[in-house]
Image: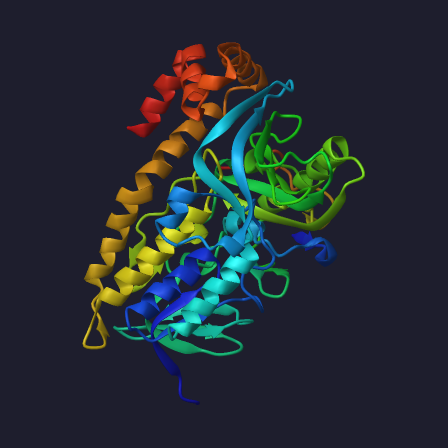
Length: 387
Length: 69
């Protein structure tokens, strides 16, 4: 039996949540490792890469070299093709996530975290009263605190007692690609709605510098059939961007339910997609992941006293998450659940109604208000879900 | 049982996330544990690239169209 290495805090998963957890755990002076299954962080990018500056900078300061384009407007296209353009009232960008995650991983390492790429943890088990054994074929080690940021699969968390299996209503099956074509609208985030294009979800086209865009779509799991997202994405690209250069075709599952509770069990914390943290109306998860990772890492580091982890203070993580983003996710879930039963004609109604108003005074909020005005039952349903 | 077409798999783990019985392992490709799999077909439906299929080409009786319990 060889000596087993020991860490104060082990972070499993090198996406935005895990990297931030490692940065803040290391900044707190702990002995930290950051483990990732892949050889390099941030690749492949399974994401639309759009961020709102406000949410982003509550965790990370945006570096100019990460920016691929500045979002100047949002455009919603209804099922019948009616376009509603909303000038962007929040500062937003499309970012190069591969570059961002590579830089942030370097930061974690410069702060003293040990990066272990190309390492698959197959199990996390309580080792004694104070720690956990993280086992992989490559290297097994012990840690007093484990932060699970393993992404949507959340399988290690399942092994530790969390009910992570996603209901098919609460997952979007997504496919996306980089598209180069002259029809890409500069500075726009375009959302196409409609059952024909993406049942229960939407198609997004986010300008990513030059004539390129991230194009992707999500189909709600309950209405998805074998291979549908890829087929629909290819059909959309053929229709809107004929002859385009298409690269980086990838896929993902996006959790669209409530965040998992509790976020802390014993010395284990969940962050990011692994905890099902997501804005369920927009499908935006980067800001949530960054914040949850940062908070989990900082709270974990603070919970150590004379080199020993005190587990009780870890619970502050859930309190901080719940008040910062948890409530917002709850509202987004209620809106998603309310909208899911409304069919395409409703969305066309709303689009017609708001375009009549004139584009100058349009905001996302006014579109929602119009939706509620058109269908008062919708408002009732949202209230009921929020209770 | 479910069959895996490795050349189509992008290792996105959506199947792992929806499996109700923890029968799928992602580690350099997908492996399905035949002892645990209940052939519910959820993974087949949600795989964005269509890399999974019922092994015999037939959905087991009583599970067709059963997307969530």
